[in-house]
Image 1 (cartoon, helix red, strand yellow):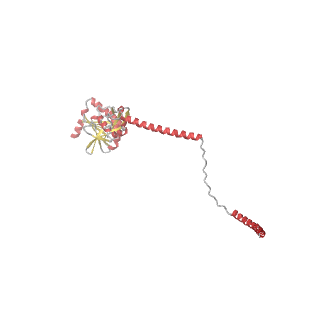
Image 2 (cartoon, rainbow, N blue to C red):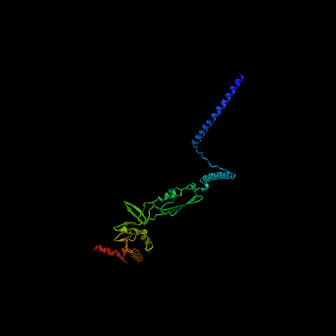
Image 3 (cartoon, rainbow, N blue to C red):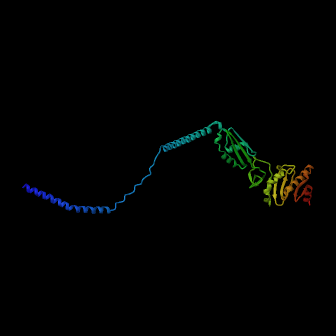
Length: 311
C-alpha cells in the first residue's frame, strides 16, 4: 500500500510540474502584453512648483543693515531732540521779559496823532515783541484814509519804528453839502472837521474844467516856486473852467487872478511878476483882477471897473 501510494504521489507531483511548466509561457506572454499596455498609457502631468530664488545673507550685509538701522535711529533721535529744543526756546522767548516792547517811534505823521496811531495798530508797551504781527498792524493803519503808505520795522529785543506817509490835501471841495479834503489827483481824503482843520483853498469845477483837473497838482507846485508875494494858503478858492482857465482869489487883497490853460507855466510866471511889482508899489488895492494868457497880461483897476458899472 505504501509503495502504491508513493508512486501515485510522485505522479501527481510530476503532473503538477508539467502543468505549471505549460502555463508559465502563457503567463509570461500575458504579463508582457500588460507591460506594453502600461507603457502606452500617458502619465498624468504634475503641476510645476514655484521655486523662490535662494537668498544668501553674508556677514557684510548683516553689518550694513545694522549700520543703517543705527543711523536711522540716531537721526530720528536728533530730530526729536531738536524739535523739543525749538519748542522750549520759543516758549522761553515768548514769555521772557527780555523781549518786552519798551520803545515805539512814529515818524511822518502831521495830521494824525501818535496816540491814535498806536491805538489803531495795536502795538503796546510791555507786550512781547515776538508776538506782534507786523503785517496785521500795517493793514490796520492802511485802512485810515489819511495814510497812503506805512512801514513797521521790528528791532529786537523790544523796539518798533512806524514810518507813516500821509496823504497831502491841497484843496477842499464840497460834495453832497459836505466839505472834504482832496489831494492833487482830485481824490477825496476825509471830511473837514475842527480836529483836522487846515486852511486850504476851495476847489471848484466850472464848465469844461474837468480837462484841467489832472494838472492841478503840478499847478500848485509851480505856484509855490513862481515868486508870488503870498502863500497858497491865502487863496480862498480856485476855479477850473474852459474859458477862465485857472482862476484864483487872493482874499487879503481882494484880487482875482486868471491864468490861461495853454502855456500855463509861462502865464503863471508872468502874472507872478506883475503881482510882485504892484505889491511892492502898494498898488494892489487899486487892482481887482489880473489875467495872463497868450503871452500877455491884462489888469483891471477898481476905477475902471467902477466906471464900467456906472456906464
